[in-house]
Length: 468
Image 1 (cartoon, rainbow, N blue to C red):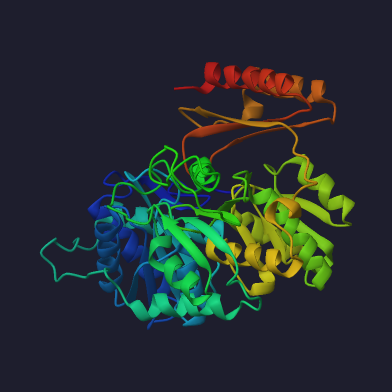
Image 2 (image 1 turned 180 degrees about the vertical axis):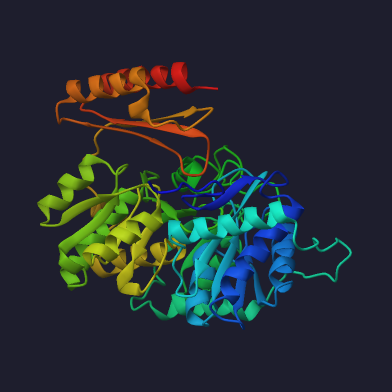
């Protein structure tokens, strides 16, 4: 039986900053454990680190750097940079690993540690488990004294601007279409995109209006960004001024783009303010890539959460859709297994292997959507007009433990009853979050009434058996 990880979830380590495993001491031990892991392979290992805009990110990054330095690891900081920016730097500048301090779309009080290997890929589960074992061994043995806070400072900010610039240059160099005629509204979520998005869009000569681009350490993702795509949609539709929810915007935009806190994903809205999610992006990208001959094996890898409507729309275009577990690293693993060049999640993580991307990249996704609009001379609304979305609801249930649903008779019975009723005309997906103590209940059905009723039945069963 595969041993489960205790610290790493589907997207690294994530919890409330200041609580274990993100205390000052434990972060130092994580740095030492990662350093030990790296020097076994290369005694002269080098690591690049980046972070988002949370108040806790600088001290966590500094403490991790101290842990790495204590075992002889050479480190460089890119300062505030997107998660895919670190992945790019790791592989393009031949670092042995890249580390990101971010909790993505979570509130500012949370934070996390994501680790990329030297080739820019997120670590496999087995590798993360090995690092976990070393962390716990160091904590239990207390073999090495923790560096005191008075140790020589290792500062991660502002970081090396040249590193950030090289990432922006790489993104811009891959653009072959003239994007200067586009008018775009961009929500940076007061997160990492604030450091690179303005430079990138200036380089592409896009007429861009930015908002939520003034991070203060506590406003990341706060009623903005990909988690609140309706904020962008209201702005583009002229129902908001971008910072408040009052009428005021009189500009016309061709589209809106919104990132999450670390900008590894992007969502969009069309010129009328209708939200366009990751499923729709996969559809428009798959069709265009097929036309250009870059959609390997005419296959797209989505996840268990992608809507049935996407599957049907792709089939009409002669494109096969496969489903992977939720988490862009699992999408990537399936893409590599079958040789696909496009994959992603409904939440906006999109992977373009034809662009040599090794993780979801919101800025790259934004560029590709704009290029497709220019090449096809179609609006965003036109590109996804035939995507008929099945009604879908997702309920989150906070749980005290993540016991297998099959081992909880009342929950398993509720799931099976819903599946029998749908009889293939909808879907039931019940899973645990990889980063939080949550059970997620997703129902797709032909009617909203049936969808909500079945979701409520399963939610009640989970709350009764496992809820906090």
